[in-house]
Image (cartoon, rainbow, N blue to C red; front, side):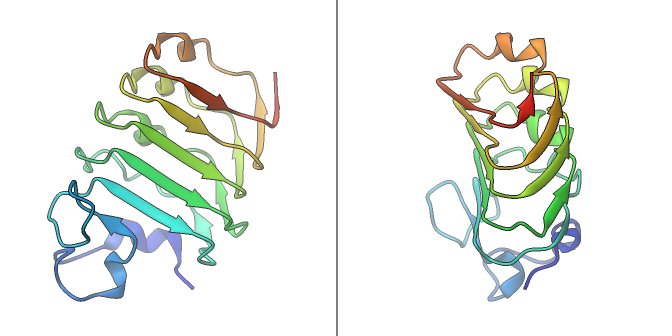
Length: 143
């Protein structure tokens, strides 16, 4: 079981043999890169609150975090500050609150899926600024 707050304390290189970096892939799809392009965590029993630590990952293009109901808290606004972010799939978690207005700054975003969470509130009008957005699945108690 991985505790989500540990993401903020990752140390060393993704090239080093370490369970800490499992699920993080470089731009060419291999796990041995200094620049992280993908974070993929599927059904891995993670628990905790998703930390707001994504700003330093400037090469991050995709985050896939699904099927971990032990992951809660609000959606970190730093997910949307990366101009290279293309895909955000955070499904079947226990995320609460609203979709941050910073979503409008993720201009390369083509897929946003936040299904099966506990989100509430209104969908931000800033979503209209995402000209690359093809799929937006925000099925929750949002208006």
